[in-house]
Structures are given as C-alpha cells and as structure tokens.
Image (cartoon, rainbow, N blue to C red; front, side, top):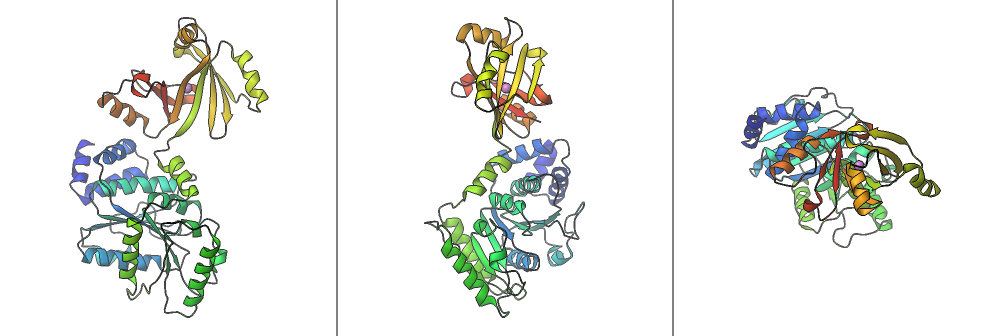
Length: 393
Ligand code: CO
C-alpha cells in the first residue's frame, strides 16, 4: 500500500485507476488507503452537477473539462449514473463521449454505478474523490442524475452544486423532487436557445421567491448551450463567485454530511455503569425505551443491555466480577456515565493512526464486542477527560 500511495501522490493515473477500483469494490485495505490519502491534506475544487436525464449534463461536463484544461487545470470526473451504459468495472477513459480527452493525462474520468444502501453511492464517490484529490487533480466534477437521495450526498461532498434544467422536458420546475431545488448553489438553464427557456428561468426565480434566502448567496441562474459551449465561461465564473462566498449549507446537507460522509462519524451509544441492569432499566422503560439486546462480554467481565434511542443507544453495563473494569469503576465512583462511544469508518486505520500519533489508548488492540462490532477505547487523558470508545465494523 505504501508504494501505491507514493505513486498515487505522484499523480500516476494507473495507480489512481487501481486505487479507485479498490474503493469501488470495497477491497481490503481500501479504507486504510483513503485514510492515508486524507492525511495528505490535498484539496481539489469539487463541483457537483445534477439534474434530470436529458438535461445535457454530460455535454456540459465535457465543456467544463475543456475550458478548465485550456487554462491548465487538471480535472477528475466522477460520473455517477445508475442508468449509465458505462457501468460495471468501468475503466480509465472508458466513456465514449470523453474520447476527446482520452490521450490527455490531465483528465481522469471514472463512471460509477449506483450501488449499496442509502448513502452507499455517495460514500463510495467520496472515497474516489479523496483519491483524486490525493493524486493532485485541481478540480473534481461529480456528475449525478437527479434521482433521489444520492444527490444530497453528492451535494454534501461538493463545494458547489449546479442543478441543470432544460426547457421542454415536460418536467416543470415545480415537479422536481422536494429537496432537489434546495441543494442548488447555481441553476443552469441549458439548451437555452430552445423556446421555453424564459419560462424555466421564471419558474426558478418564482420558486426562489418562496424559499428562505441565504444572506450571503442567492443561487444565480446561468443560461448555457452546452452543445456549442455558450455560457460555459459564465458558469465557471459563477462557480468561483460561489466558492468565494461564505459557506452556505442547508440543514439536510449538513445532516447527511455528518451521518454519511463524515467518515460515518456519529454518536453510537452512551455507556452507563450500573450495579444491576434489572434494577436500572426500569427508569429507561418508563421513558419509553426498551432493551433490544443483552449480551455478556466475557473478556470484559461485563453484562450489557442496549436500549435504542433514535440513531444511538444507551448501553447499561453491569459487572460480572468485582475485579473487572466496571466492577472497579463502581467501587471507586459509583454508578454513572462510564464512556461515550462514537461510530467511525476504518477502525483499524484509526487505531493505527492514533497509536502512531502517540494518543493514549486504553485498549491494546481493536477488539470484538457486543453484537460483533469492533471497538477500542481512548484514554480520558487524551480526550478531555472522557473515556471514549470508537466503534466500527
Ligand atoms: Co460501549
């Protein structure tokens, strides 16, 4: 992996192509590779492009790539399209429409199929994006079809999100899925030489009038004719203006980013040490919670009961021996909050990185705990006084 990272960081497109395949396939070591790439700290300008099928997004992307290349910028394109004919083990430079860039090592194109559970695609795209940034590409364009939850994830990933609309698709602005209008930082009316372009623009402006305004950024409407390149320079100028404006992030994008892209970071559970689970759970049941899972973790000499609470849980911990971690905690401190558990991706990489960084860990290795989840503890000395458990798959 060290060699791959080295070649990737040097901008080797073959290493990048192989790394992307690893991430897409969820291959062993992919999470570690992404973590290592992230540590390089390289950032690209990330542009998300979404809109209904037939809006001319692909042609627009081609024009943007051409314009950026003309100014000497290196570009990565992640084309996410569940209906794309170019899916399934897509290779470097596989897209016919990109043939114009096939011999250009400054452009890296990757098609991705929709796959996995909710947010799976966005997560996978986020990983590929990190690889492209590590390879030193200056701009990464993420193209999606406007089909649902995925573009919210893509919007969370991108610095600027462009929503492409066209006249005459029988697809009125009002009929767009709820939430899609809200993610746009810039509206594009493409094929604006067609009749009906004025009407699309008017509808966008009317809908904007209804919504809450951001004080720093009112999404502009840019007219383009992607087939001829008209308006593409104006679009790039709007992208730059948007990047320069104070950050605009709506609540749904933030929530998605935190839950599904922020390395899957979220509060997993609160661990509460009790003398008796049977006695303690009564209060939580009164609160409307109930025990979903009880398990004794032999190597920790502790009996646990999980009580779900939204996306997270309360974990009641009862010692099975006095001379156990929880037994000693009870003797010294009495019942109470014992630890806070945060869910992360790439738990092995996290463990290794923290060890390398000299962070004081309270586990000598990543262990298997309740429900088969893997975990390790970080000592309160390194966390501001809280015993922190990191949980992952
Ligand atoms: Co725990």
